[in-house]
Amino acid sequence: MSTPPNGAPAGQAPWGTANGHGGTTSGGRTRHTHKERTFNVNFGANNGNGQAPNGGQAPGGGGAADRHQGDRLIYAIERIEFRSDKDILALAKAVNHLGRELYLILGMRAEELNGVLSQYKGKWYTFGTQSRIKARLVSAHLKVSAEAAKALGVGALKMAHAFDRHFVKPEQEAKQKRNGKTARPTFTIGED
Image 1 (cartoon, rainbow, N blue to C red):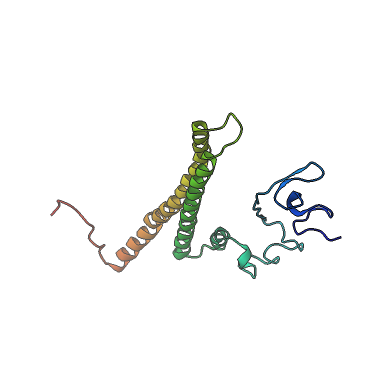
Image 2 (image 1 turned 60 degrees about the vertical axis):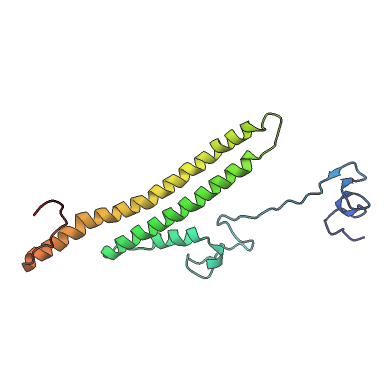
């Protein structure tokens, strides 16, 4: 005997009845007729053959298809070595980009979570307006995380501005004084 295409034991019809349209099997069990999607998510464990998802290589190696864009952004931040002012500005830009990406992703996911949970029709005690209120309460936590990611990006830009103000500008002014050049006139309002 062969196994039916849905994996039911031999001797039973696929999907539970002799005509294949749901109902109960001869054993009294109920078979579901709806289909559910499942997704396999690996968080860096292995890819089934005992190796790391990117083939055991360092990030940026041959397994680029296995990584998410956020992994690439984080790796770009990790590999910056501070050798000049350009490296500090590159770090600020990379962290800002990561913060903006996280802000957008988490904001969209919070709205999606709110929409899914507000339509939840579960047990007798969770229906109607209560479900919408509870959905807002749950998704609000993800929105807070999105705002924190936004603050991450803004903080990186503030760091770059502070670096410019405290290190770059004084260095430029010192060079100009040494060379005998006067500083450029600054922008003023109402003074002659």
